[in-house]
Length: 311
Image 1 (cartoon, rainbow, N blue to C red):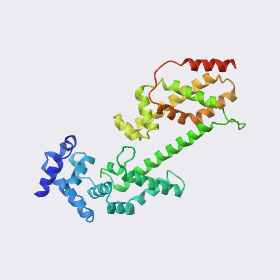
Image 2: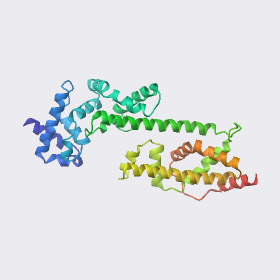
Image 3: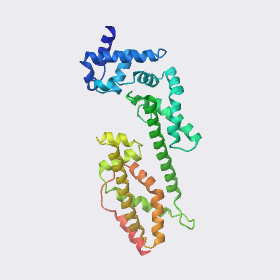
Image 4: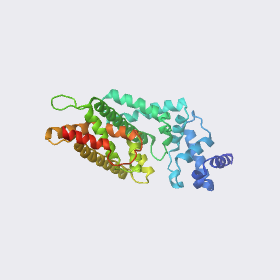
């Protein structure tokens, strides 16, 4: 009787938008008590009150009753304890679950040292807030095995890490400048012209397109999160982001060829190398500036083009 009363109080403490399916159903409340008891028995050395567990479970597993009955309560309990900073729970997690990500990470990076480094970084991300985002472990719903969910998180984390490394390498290339076949660096003017061409190309996309591309390239938001915010499937969002970048690439290349007045094959190849090595970093830098003032190609753009043509 006490557990049922406690459960009702726990449910009432939850945000009304989330507690709807649970508040009026007595059988649901009994199921929540049973899930807590099952989890508590699995980890008797880890103490979490029934109120805290049920409030957390309702938040992360906001599903109809059929889904709630499938929740892996013991693993949600362990995840919550880790989230709350329980050192015993985190020790169990480190021994029994964290080693399972090695294979997933090894598929994304090639060196054992990098795998271990990524695993350490992943553990920090799992248990700590970063950039205002909650710890990753807070997203575990219990509807999949914890080790299976963890492998998926590790794969996404490693891919995001690789993208960051690629941006850094491209940024270094942008700072250093590409070279032609003779080994001579292309001029700073060439890089400035790329930035100008990209600025003009960015004027051809809408504010919403620019915002979503900024979330992806600058803020590192996952495609799945962008898809969720747009109420669409991940594959649709991924295809849309790829096409948008291809569109910007093609338009920037066109403007850069026009601006530099490249007519022979050698100059065209230099433009291609500049685009291939520096486009992504230049695009990221452009997006960091924020929304532009929409306008037609600037006078300075036309003036530089005329100057190149005269030369």
